[in-house]
Amino acid sequence: DAKTTQPNSMESNEEEPVHLPCNHSTISGTDYIHWYRQLPSQGPEYVIHGLTSNVNNRMASLAIAEDRKSSTLILHRATLRDAAVYYCILTGANSKLTFGKGITLSVRP
Amino acid sequence: NAGVTQTPKFQVLKTGQSMTLQCAQDMNHNSMYWYRQDPGMGLRLIYYSASEGTTDKGEVPNGYNVSRLNKREFSLRLESAAPSQTSVYFCASSSPRTSGGSTDTQYFGPGTRLTVL
Image (cartoon, rainbow over all chains, first blue to last red; front, side, top):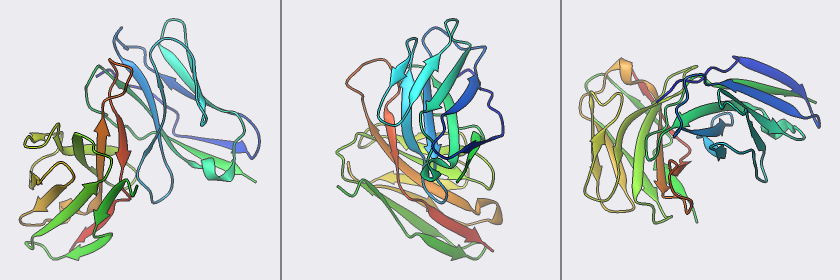
């Protein structure tokens, strides 16, 4: 699977939007972009995934660049509960999740 | 639904001791996984089971064995624990998405924190 690059950390203020970037310049045409997050002392949880088009769900939005070499996870209004490590993961069809170090999001009250 | 449950939550072993970590899911998922997470790192896949009766090695299988007891349960055994196996162990399960072509969504348990002295 192709690799992803994320900043180590990011800070945001409560109730403001947060944009978490992910670079994946070697993505192949069949790779999906997945985001998981891991709250402190918990297992990871699925956030969102996409292939080419932007995606929205109740947790977040995923904006995918036209060339698919980067993507951005958007939390529309950060809450204290959103403080977590966010993982951007590429997968081919039916392949396994490979977790990097992710980006640590801190939310200031 | 309880989702994915793991026992025990915490465990301390001495070098050379053995133990089995238990995992169960009540979502009728076909696939189950065992990961380990070392401090400050992402998760690494130890073993997985694509369906009842099958198991396959992941990225870091050495020192571990697994058993897919039935569709619900997937256990991880450390035959002779070593300090290098001190870690947090997560179990996960998944089933195919209704939209085809992408990797299944995985659901994770709360983890087992293992210390080997």
